[in-house]
Structures are given as structure tokens and as C-alpha cells.
Amino acid sequence: EALASAQRRREAEAGTAERRAEREAKGWAVEREASQLELEAAVHGAEAAELLAELAQDVAAEARKALFRLDRLRELQSEVPALEGHLKKTIPRTVAAEIAVSHDGAHWADVGPWCPDSESQARLSCAARRRRAARHGVR
Image (cartoon, rainbow, N blue to C red; front, side):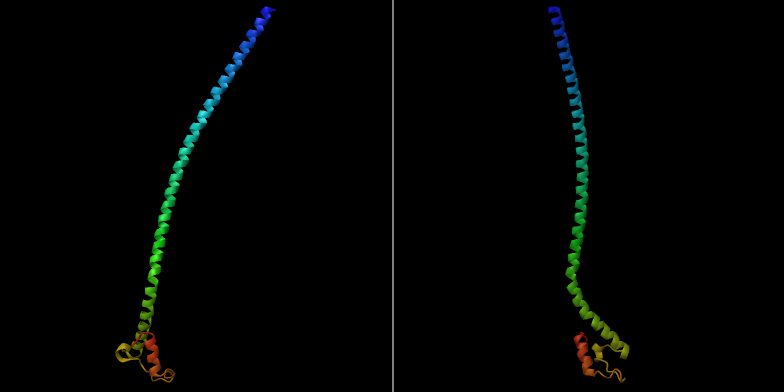
């Protein structure tokens, strides 16, 4: 009986040692797998960081382009009132001068407004034409 008891105890210790060895082996396997996963995560994290950096550079470049366009638009908008004023002065004078030259070969600024002889154009008096020309900047 003492022999049987010692035998059982050795078998139990052997089973315990075997289970302990299995647990340690599983632990090492789990640790290796965790280590591998950590390594993969670090690699993927580095790749993600690199892609984010590239994306940030692209966004910054597009933002610079948009700011440049916005500045150019503001610059052009600031020029609009001056251009409008210039056109309001220039176009009527140019058109009136072309009309004057086409009718009598002289510029209104030189000889005054042309007074037509035909009945259809004679409805407006020369004074009315002069007033209209003065409104448009033609003298």
C-alpha cells in the first residue's frame, strides 16, 4: 500500500509537472504571439503615421492654393470699383466720339455735338443732345 501510495504520488507529481510544462509552453506561445502582434501593430502604426503625414502635406498644399486663390480674388474685387469708374467714364466718351466721327467726321470735343438735319433725328434739339453728351462725359 505504501508502494501504491508512492506510485500514485509520483504519477500525480509527474502529471502536475507535465501540466506545468504545458502551461509554460502555452504561456511562451502566447507571449510569442503577443510579441508578434505588437511588432505588427508597430509596423502598421508607422505606416499609418507615414500616410497621415503625407495626407497632412497634401491638405496643407491644397490650403495654400485655396488661400492664394482667395487672395487673388480679393485683389481682383478691390480693382472692380476702379475699373467700373473707368468704364463709366471711358465707354460713353468712346461711343459718343465714334458716333460723332461717323456722322460728321469730327470729334464732339472739338466741334460740339452734331445736330442732324433729317426729320427723324431732329426731334431732339441740339441743346438736349448737348445735355445728354454732358451726362456721358463728352464735351
